[in-house]
Figure (cartoon, rainbow, N blue to C red):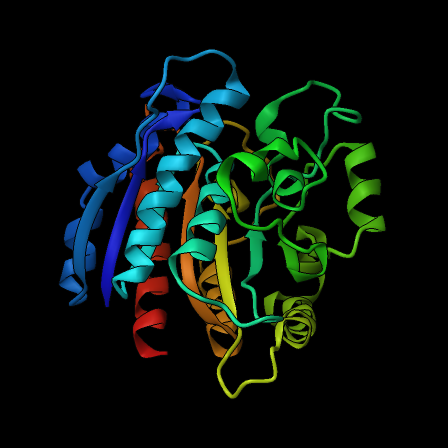
Length: 300
């Protein structure tokens, strides 16, 4: 598979701080070599903030303009974009880049599978902290900061084309918003009770039905993984660890299930916070996710 790794070394628009150090850490711990050993051709692109930092929102949208351009260039060239991001908000640039990088038929826009320990569905009105990176899924669906789509171009994600998997640390008002939306959800407790297949397959089948554009091809999908969806025993180097997460085997199995029902168009991988004793296992988990996605995309 021809892969473009898009390196996004920003934490809420600030370069090389916090989880913004995670993308380069993947490169330093051998992710590129691991992909090449699997016979993938790998190119590297670097997203950059063009303007001086003014506000977090302005900076995030500035960075995502660059992310979108790199993703669009990759898909236009027939390459799989794998976006290594500090924050989950980079998913905005991924979607904008997909929509401008290739034509999608009416009714055939990419769906989204969002793996995260947290809801990321807060809005300024309900957020207890105002933390911007608690809102990226809400921003994708145009519930929060609608100026994002004016800035980036493209179209918001219809809620009915989103599936959230693995949540276990969600604010009360955010939980209400998720449950009253048309976003499909499979939380960590459901997976723990039933197992990854029985919990996830019905939701994936429903998402595929919603995303089907009546063509013979598999519907397209953007996979987003916040590495904290994994249990801290597997991926401890994250900003907001939450116990009770997925095993790596469960996550890789889930990706296989997605690949059986969808055409993987892009991966965004976020929230690796290097600097601790768990960096090696966290990096290895992230690299395994990249390699699995690239291999599934190559086979489709």
